[in-house]
Figure (cartoon, rainbow, N blue to C red):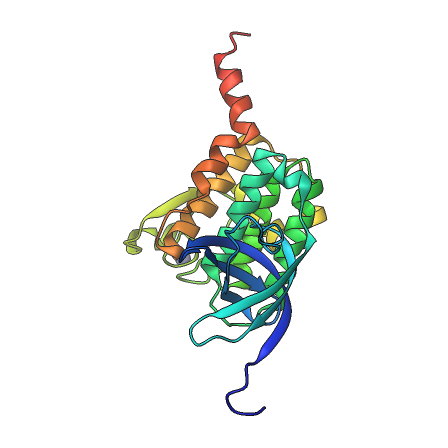
Length: 267
Ligand SMILES: [Zn+2]
């Protein structure tokens, strides 16, 4: 490479989010197969005539050309590969997909290659496009993202004393990343979340199986709610913040609506 020459490159990416900067530009947070998270600017995309703006919508899978900039790389070309119309036309699917994009964003480092996370993200979007159960998909993918990020919880033996766990309700320690057995409870001065046996079993199943099998499991609204409580509690602890999209996902969750109806329904 000659010194001073502008270096360009092409990559595939998923648009995780964007925000406006300057007068007509946007900053994009992209997730790429070989460079992990990349922040890049597209010039002029907020102008009405911009050819790139339609392609660079959040959640779109795109082919992009970039040039290396001093601080941020510049997106020079963008073309959508997949735009997920069914996700965009369904509030639950949309909020589920946004939640997953926020998770990948939260757990990934910039310029740190992770093709397996890229593959997981794109397969999650492909599945969200066709599934009838986006909430269950979210809990499965959330479990896998935790695993791939090195935070997969220990669910088979006590994190403090390594004793294999008895089949019973246990307590989950976010700070220790797994289950605490009854003997170690008193010594653990951490906040613990109860985790019923059936939730533990589902999480173990999620950790070991592909998405298709995970989505075939018949999980009722209560169990999905328990999974959410444990997974979101742990995620919140790890990211040290609330997920922006979690509240919205909860609002549009069809199971939640059904539950509210059954309480109000006198029959
Ligand atoms: Zn123990």
